[in-house]
Amino acid sequence: MQGKRVLLIVSGGIAAVKIPEVVRRIREQGGHVRCVITEGGKQFVTPLSLAALSEDKVYDDLFSLTDENEMGHINLSREADVLMVAPASADIMARMAGGMANDLATTVLLATDKPVIVVPAMNVRMWEHAATQANMETLKKRGVTFVGPVDGDMACGEFGMGRMSEPAEIVDALVNFFDGGIGDLGSKPLAGRHAIVTSGPTHEPIDPVRYIANRSSGKQGHAIAAALAAYGCKTTLVSGPTTLPDPVGCDVIKIESAREMLAAVESALPADIAVCAAAVADWRTDAAPDRKIKKQAGADSPTLNMVENPDILATLSKAGNKRPPLVVGFAAETNDVIANATDKRARKGCDWMIANDVSPATGTFSGDSNTVHFINETGAEDWPKLSKSDVAARLVDRIARHFEAAE
Image (cartoon, rainbow, N blue to C red):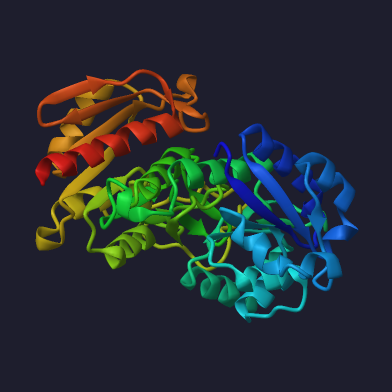
């Protein structure tokens, strides 16, 4: 993002105390930052702090005679490459959705024709409120991109969805935006194509408070979705429960169980590419009671009757005329990695299989790096240990070259 200009709009909320770190990190990446701050934002971070870190004036007054003499609210957005609202409170999201222009921040947002990225931060109840969710959907339909929010502890003492993504994650999203980007899709290798990516674990209920899960973090699947979007691909990410922010440029469908994931994948068809990176639970209980299973003194341990979950990779691979032209599976193995993955590719009927060792000693599930083996009809190709972002970039480059060769 060297030389790129970010207009950072800071609204009210305790998460605003993290914004100076965001400004610092953008500058470290070679970007230029200019800040607009609302009256609410000034209750948590001072304009002087933002001015010192950005080395630029901070704007806050819609009726400044000096600034508005030259139509400052128009020029502020015109001179930026992207507008980012961080933190984005429930209030400013509502005003954006309603097309209001009652302060400098909302006037700039209404007057812009540049891409807009929103980084929400609010109490979990406010985030889950039907009005906020409706406002989010309205903004997404207008092309606004969201980063986060994520699950976590909040200043109010509650825990849940609504916590702002961390500064490093916010700046990573900006880097992905500029270095891969969702701007000029016509020049991207996968422009005009649609990909479906599954990511994360699934949770299979045992009763209302317990579930069967696995250790998948979703980092690899989310990185692949971000890389596909950066290549210009319309990307639908179907994600199990994770704490990761939504990748920039992706349509995200959040699910819990394997059956919900399959339904979401099928509803997203047709697609040119399917990448099944999720760690889907193979089994679920045959019936989950609607009450918590209680421990009874002297009684035997409860017996869980298990049934097989739907096989999403096999279903896509054998979907007849609805089958994506390229189906990629993941094989998370703890032993005989290449042999087991090669067998899995044959059984599932997918085109490519990405195999990796997820035994506890590797730290693959929770870590940021991965060592994978690329398997297709010609055999196995060993890739070196890479960051999960680099694995994603290498895979998506392979996908782009595959379609280029087929044309």
